[in-house]
Image (cartoon, rainbow, N blue to C red):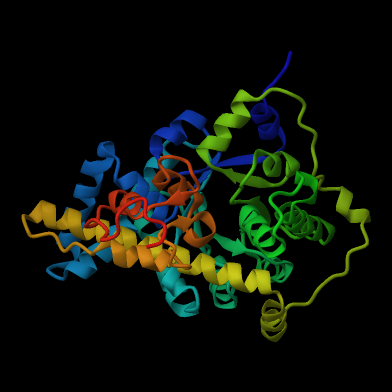
Length: 395
């Protein structure tokens, strides 16, 4: 009997749904799920969640009073927890909830926010064992995660692009890391001018495999979860990884494709490999990170992208709050936001420029041409229309 790639992958790897859409999670029934502000933004714009957003905004107003910014800040955390709680009603495992990316270099602020989010979950009746607090794998983020883990709060360190980050995370005893496979490929394609790589030669695949083998060689308990995929081949080439977080379009493709799926990553194989053990302290981390141009650029871009996604969510909630309370909208001209992403000023946002979550890029790129127009962005985040006319690539 022929089986789908999805069935076979689930036998050797924990599949995580990379979406904030509760309906998609119900459809694919992953063990774990992950979310962040840009995924919440996408979900919050769906008509079926409008009442959820309204209820959270009203609750936040009661809790923090008259200051609109504080209401929005509280609502963002409350929405993250609400979508997380609803997700946990469906799945058997854990949900990842992200700390404000603007705290990525603030160790103490990250620790405080992690405790606050877990407090909201526990008040909602959710055990902390079912929640991973997610933050960027800066040195400060890793130190914050180490403290949170010591406090009994489990962490997911995201935006991992280099072995030095992965080793520091393992030494800090974090629960899970998320290497960004597709973004590493993006960087190398741009750097080399190549259009594609065979899956076995994909730089992102090779980077994750190196981290996986290092962890298994030295017996670290930190789990490896591959993230940010560009091709189905990247996913199948990493069959056997501890976890893979996969967007709904690729989950569908895996379900629809039959054939043999060989295991590529084996936990016992690295024990006989010749791998040097590394020592990573703050000075070494900073030195190695500065020398790794890809990791430096992609970590910075990722934090910037996640921060912009949070700003977009803030604007969306500001407008929803104004609607609820009968006030005039405080629209932000989408042209301002557009220019933040349109790095080369050509009037279109490419996937590489976006730097935010891939799922949201795909949602905004309604015609599938690999770019986001000013009108696409304005419609997607509920802001005032851009000044540029759609279709004018010269800006």
